Length: 125
Image 1: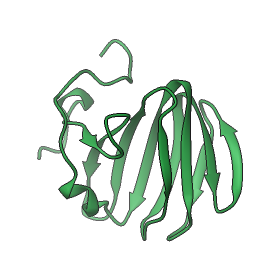
Image 2 (image 1 turned 45 degrees about the vertical axis):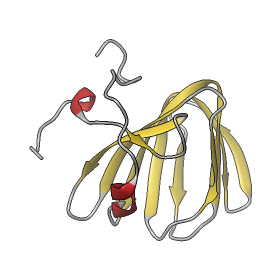
Image 3 (image 1 turned 120 degrees about the vertical axis):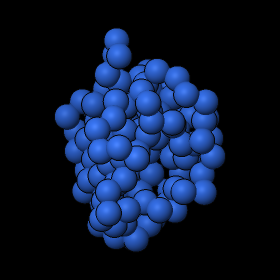
């Protein structure tokens, strides 16, 4: 993979069905993911060894993290430490979020790749 790419050239990964897809940029030690959530999409409760930092770019989500629930819109952030349970519900217009994981999300290597299409963010790309 080249070090400089446009988001639209990265094939989306099917994370939780067609309703939750991600495009990732993978480094040696971390993963940057731009995640698109369809309207009312649900990421069921799960946990992983990776630490995760994230932010809503567009739309809104209701995030439950380690027993705390909060509605987040653009600019809302989260910090998920290793193995903390979390789930996400997208709002009625869906959402685009950016997540950063360390170490890399190599568990996504086996996830299906989806047909290329223009990303939901940034608009007009």
